[in-house]
Length: 289
Image (cartoon, rainbow, N blue to C red; front, side, top):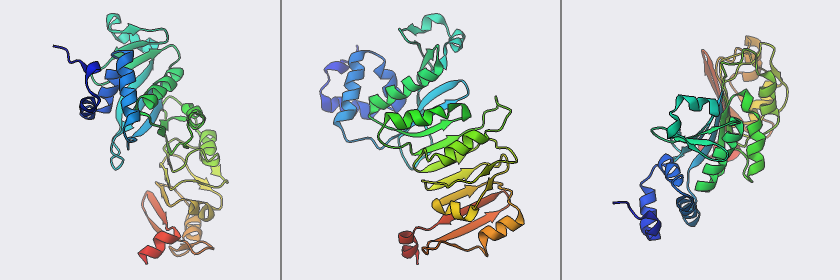
């Protein structure tokens, strides 16, 4: 016997929703427009969720992911966008045709097929953001998806918190211009995770920040002008296999102690294939002392 969810009292309905995972809620929202409106209303009447929404755009697909517990890093995929050509791998009778896309369902989440999957990536993020009343927290993309930074920052009042730039095996050239744009344009508020390839001559001479974390992969050779002045702008810098010369490292570390003109100090730890620097903000540093 079907459960009359549309006629369920709000308190009972809220308890039912609390038992569902994010991907299950998104799947349920495709049942009908009434169910979607009910779910959307539910997430606007309750206290704001402490969830984080991520836009994933890599190679030839887009995805909306959610982290339900901020202290955990495992993202849960809730909705996927693919090019319509991928639909031929599905049975046509399993797909539902709409005006803008074809809809199918995998074992865990809905999959939408678009003629323009980049537009589809925007649509699925808008859909999930509206359903859960969430801003986009982070972007995970390759260099072909840099455009999404401005799109996200223009669609919401809160600045994009972080970006993870992935290596794309489809490209055999270095992403110097894209990396320079991300670092120079101050397009995210908190963290940068950079895994793309740069050339041996890549050089960044701007100022880093804002943000509290910078992580650089071991691919390519990174060169920062005024290195010791720029990394002081971030609270935590993590550089893997940075390949600085002994002279550069000695000049930067200056006996393992860095102190800004305003008295803020840094703690440095490095070894084979890694370099980590924590910049202590004055209030935190005083508490430690």
